[in-house]
Length: 495
Image 1 (cartoon, helix red, strand yellow):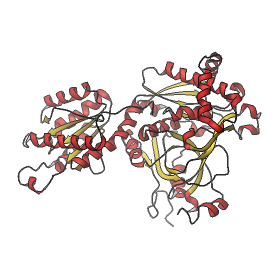
Image 2 (cartoon, helix red, strand yellow; image 1 turned 60 degrees about the vertical axis):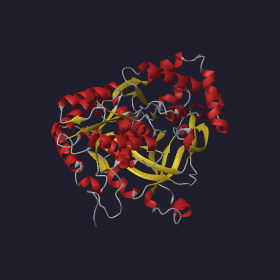
Image 3 (cartoon, rainbow, N blue to C red; image 1 turned 90 degrees about the vertical axis):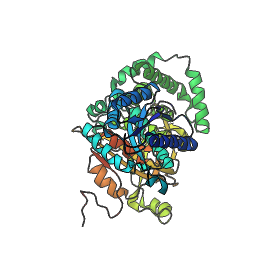
Image 4 (cartoon, helix red, strand yellow; image 1 turned 120 degrees about the vertical axis):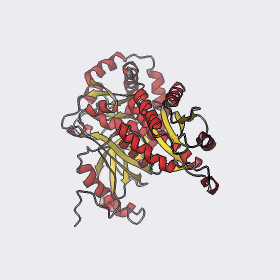
């Protein structure tokens, strides 16, 4: 997957001076050995400096992990730990690099250590957390942060996709082409929160894009790009006459991204696709959006800037392609009764259909095919609405989520796990029958109650735990999720 960071976690051992330093060093060595045995080498780096209640040691460890290219930090309490210097390391690393920090601690290995080699890191984590709050330092602390070498290796491995998203966001530029379509205020949100997160935003006119597109009319790379599209589409290549125009547009967007990346390493795009796009460009950009998203560079529809950011977060966490869909329509009772009831264990209100015109990458669709945009063709000539990639979304686990600025500049998020059911949609576009436990209540008391727009990002797999931790680290004031039956939302009528 392109366009996402590679994470290297620097692990620093810390020790209280009234505990043997060897205890901390032996435990970090066992941790590194356990990690590399289970997950291989390359993800982690063991700092040779053990911080023993010394600000000098802290400076040495900080320099070492930065010089060795670590873009995430794990502070590992091999024993009780020095609360001042260990939290000072987190504070200075975060201030110097802007990269994420986690804490975890060693459990006692067996009965024999209790008589003389007890580490008391379970106690030390409490003091560390208190000192982190005094310093106002953001850190990731797992739900249960104390364990043996194998367990802590798992904690660090779980931290990597979280760190990947946080590092990616900090190094992200969103390029938009607008303005947003008329009567589409749902996708219009203040950009202040982007700057608060460290995301750069470059807003352009679609006229700028159209000018660049015209300049690519005779680009020598067009035939090669067309050939790649033909290979991807296969039997679904129903509109061969527009592939050269689509290739021209793909190259235009690709060149724009490279020349406008600026100081940032990663890019995502919020694109315009109607109402003037079709009549001027002569096609819709859905298929090209799908191709970029499949490479790890999300292109959201309808200039949805926070949708684009959400897609990028999911790309970093999952390491795979994602999509952006409308939380679109109910499943007809006829379809529910015939295809779902008694087969999959979901109530009618747990189900809905997620749809967009044709922006989901080919690998996520059953029998993908190039078609025209039916909704737009109701008021326009069909020939200018060609370019959607249509098909039912492949069944399997999904995570539905979004990070959003409210109209009054608060940062909210939601995340819910579910699945795409193996049920034929009988419809058009990139579409699937979705099922999320307690979706009806979630729809009313999270989505509607908090003013979320109709666009939701979809990651293919269950990543709720990682999403929640990312949103928490980013400082989302509210993080909604689908609460189980019997657990009421604050706004839910108990009667």
